[in-house]
Image: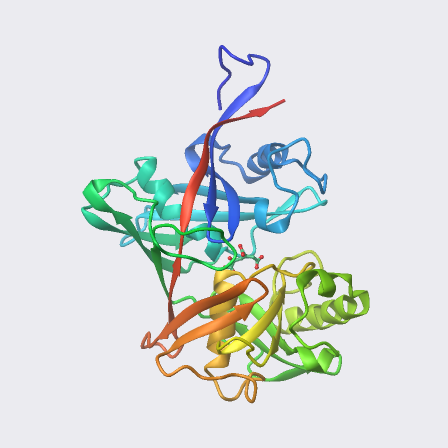
Length: 357
Ligand code: NQM
């Protein structure tokens, strides 16, 4: 943090605003932030716009997918390059939830680390090994670096983002039970809460899967239609509170996990169709690790997806969502829970200093 010749009455904090997949976050070097968590969060909340749901006095975007924070440092852990701490600013509540990680924002971590000189680019492709500090999970990111520079141009299209960009491969391993301690945290592949049959799963993200039809909807509605359906949302939240407790997450009233995925038969050649509450509003697409958990449940014939899922022949599960689809490739990781591979795109949008009054 510094003051400056310009705007001398304000504090200046280096920041890069990045798109990772279908989300956006403010990226900071851990070295630029207070070491003490309370002081750090006070500062970050001021930066993002505090408890105001519109975040008009900060740089947050007033939506859960655009009010995210990433704190980055070189890792001290053997076999790991970069530590990534994720923070979800909870809209309207003036607090940051560190319970989950975020796979979309993770897609932007490797480009940030390379551009900011935290490690060197290799020729053609650069591997960056990232530790998700929130959950302890590991991810290997492969970045396009022709001539030793990060390339952002390319032909890769991801649903929910206009245009095309350079591909960024993400390989996750050992993320089963990331937050809950077990792939099926309740000890069962099917449970019933408030009269609704569900599958609770955590392969990188705690998710509760519910059949849309069991809740009186088709599962093909738009996010706006589902968000306007107050009785549905109340029912989903009732199930979430009970499921969260049984998943070992405690009282989840004030937590953004577990996510709630309504599932239905695919409509567009995919494996399954989803509408995901994250958890208070419906996602326009689906989160990265959320989709990984859904795909993992689809691959298991004992979950509630049975009868809805169309199994792919090659392990590549196309998870349909409101703005397209997300392909998750499941790989044998040798430890009983599938490893995950997927493609994202990412890029820096703005680099500068945020000003704090
Ligand atoms: O599940 C939204 C997002 C996410 C999280 C959410 C994510 C993930 O789209 O790994 O990416 O579920 O809150 O950014």
